[in-house]
Length: 75
Image (tube, rainbow, N blue to C red; front, side):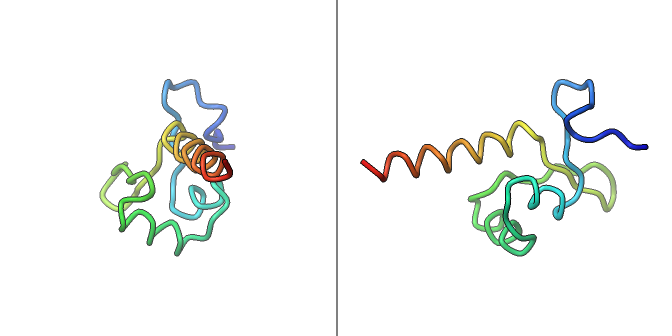
């Protein structure tokens, strides 16, 4: 059984694949692609010739920024 992003013992766990990254933050794959293309979503890192991944810390940071923006606009 492969370890999940949360159980890895690395300093920066990686979520592999756009679908998994999109599910992690609660958006669709297409939205993930479009936001990344516009520079509004963390960029994937190359893991191999055809494999990409996202750092969990960057996805968490993106979610925190979105929450902070929501709280800032509610004032």
